[in-house]
Amino acid sequence: MKVVNHRLILAVAAVALVAPSLAYASGFSLFEHGNRGMAMGGAMTAVADDPSALFWNPAGIAFQIDEGTQVQLGITFITANQDFNGSSPYPGDGYHAEQKSQTFYPPHLYLVMPLSDKASFGFSMTNPFGLGTYWDDDFAGRFISKRADIKTYNLSPNFAFKLSENFAVGLGVDYLVGQIDLTRNIPGIDPFTQQVVDIGQVHMTTEGLGNDGWGWHAGLQGKFGGFSIGALYRSEIDIDFTDGYGSFRQFATGSPDYDAALGAAIPFGEKVDLSSNIVFPDYFQIGLAWENEKWTVSGQWGTMGWSSFQELPINFTDYPHLSDVVVQNYEDADQYRIGLEYRASGKLALRLGYLEDETPQPVESMSPLLGDGDRTGYTLGIGFDIYGMQTDIGYMYLVFDTRHTGDNGGFSLDGYEGSYKTRANLVGITTTLKF
Image 1: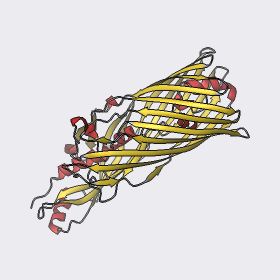
Image 2: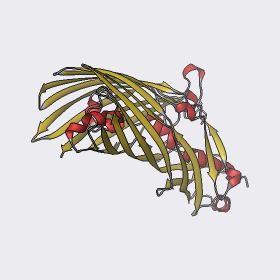
Image 3: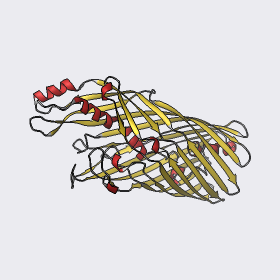
Image 4: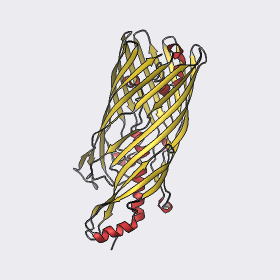
């Protein structure tokens, strides 16, 4: 009887399980941590004049000392849809699939407290990387990925100091915790029919605070008349995913002998320890803004250092001979953002924004785990003050360029050819309280 090599099956399962933890985050790095900023296209590095400065540029809280203690909290609701159109040789021309609809709701929380007339303390909680994918059970790419749910939580204390009336610096520490929940089917070749069949499902999850890493960031802000400049750098964060396991579930193929052979070769019904190492990218942003009593106009450029993601190590604690390294060859990616705010009165503001983000993903890495493309975003929002409580509502429409695995003579490393098209809608609300 011909039985599919169990080492190959487990190795392929490992790649599909671990890879999206970083790949999907690259396509959906989250910058919508404050809905005033989101409504202005994220062009906040030079502005940074409310508590969300802890994310955009912590130096900005040094110029907020007269505001007293501030608490800002909010949530952003994100819906994303992706279409896939197949090409030859697999899954073939004419094949079409759509992801299941999902809604994600990353929160954000900021606390800013003055320490003196020249120093402030801040603490933030954000979700800088996340979201997921979810395909139907009969999706042709289910052996690569069926479902992925990635979450990260960043806890960050910050200190900011006014160096003069015009300059301030901010410094902070980032403690990033990651959580992964991924599922894919396992393929096999029935030795009697020579057809590919679903022989099982493998699911991986990471739990606990042990999947964490540390980083740092620093920001500068200068104010000159109606102009302000700002710069921010955030370091790489290296996370060792050690508190994880994979569980294997067997599917009956209709052939008892084949099922028995697979059951002897694959640890169905067991939890297999898994570990990996992911280096989340550093990034740098610099911005310029101008404002008067009614208007704020801002723009910025940034780059994310995804070139750190050249390969992905996969380690099976109980099966070291199955360990592998997956080549990804990511590239650094630039971002461009502009924003506009019009203060119609002391209690009402209207906002618009525009952004362009380049994808870091090379064509050969595109797959059902992530089919990424350059992104364009259109934003708008409103801010209003009621009884001293500031509320900001923002909306973003995000559209990704259609991208084919065969672009520029490329091909899919997974042997899964076709084009991907993604759209996302984001809407959120942020409230600021002052004491």
